[in-house]
Image 1: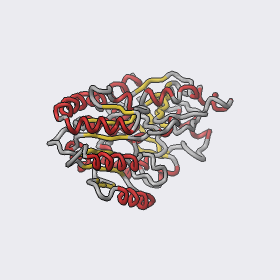
Image 2: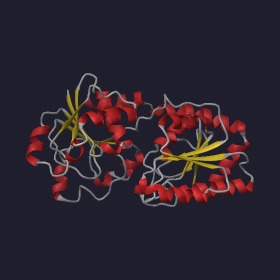
Image 3: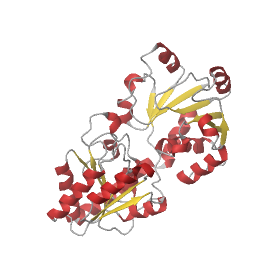
Image 4: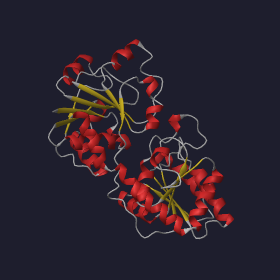
Amino acid sequence: MKIAIYSPYLDTFGGGEKYMMTIAETLSSGNDVDVLLDRHLVNLGGNFLKNKLSKRFNLDLKSVNFIFAPVGKNSSFVSRISFLKKYDVLFYLTDGSIFLPTAKKNILHIQSPLVGQPSKSIWGKLKLKGWDLIIYNSRFTKENSKKNWPLPSQIIYPPVDVGKIRPLQKKKYILSVGRFFGYLKDKKHEILIRTFKELFKEGSIKDWSLHLVGSAGEGDKEYLQQLQDLAKGVSIKFYPNLAYDDLVKLYGESSIYWHALGFNEEDPTKMEHFGISVVEAMAAGAVPVVVNKGGLKEILSNGEDGFLWDNLEQSKQLTTSLARDTKLLQNISEQATESAKRFNKNNFAKHVLRLVA
């Protein structure tokens, strides 16, 4: 089969891009797979993107073609219709915008809650009719999108490198992974820091330390410095732009994992739509103590392979219980490691292959 994959933001190297490139890797065995580059990506070059994406996501893309195509902003409507007709299947990661597709089978992928479009306009409805299926990354994303995207759908959870991440000799580490994004501040780092300081001052987590990992660009430096100033006086360590292998080691050494994205939020777009870092932590045997919001509720079973909390007092109580009860910590850790295996790449590949069978 001839298969096209279009992800408009390949140069951001995020979770959606990993999802789409894993589809490309999966289908490149026995099929002719083209990754389509629009105008803003073509200048980077197909070879550069292929090499960068392969290394970043640990994927084998050598049999995948990266080609310029008449897709994306300012592309020719006529050229696009003619170009896409040659494909048996088209996969498209949408940010809310769509076009009229002409492959034999056309599949949309939605990564996060999308509201308000495209079913509210005549032209939107017409374009929507060209698509056969939507694949969502979680039930949460589906439930908060389907009203405006009335198409048949499936849920295929993202592939997680659970085979590479494993428990190591555990230390009294609490870990949280999330970008130090100074503009949105959506990872709730301030809340995590204040909560840890309260526990530390109460004597609840003596000899424990908090470890904060995340990417940080030039525009995030001021925010990162504010967090570091807030953290003074207690054992909190920061790891901006930590190498992946070092992160894997830190996952393995950590005993508890915190995640607070979505706390005090009502807007679904401001919640965690899945939570890859939580699954990675579970694979390493770090017990998740995470906010009871968004897609996080699908990843773990409360009290069995991790814990969900609704308020900060609950998060403190759960963390204290784990820190003081080594047997409880070990039991939940073992369950978390086993549970994380559900999200391995082999399971993801099986679902993708069924789509094109």
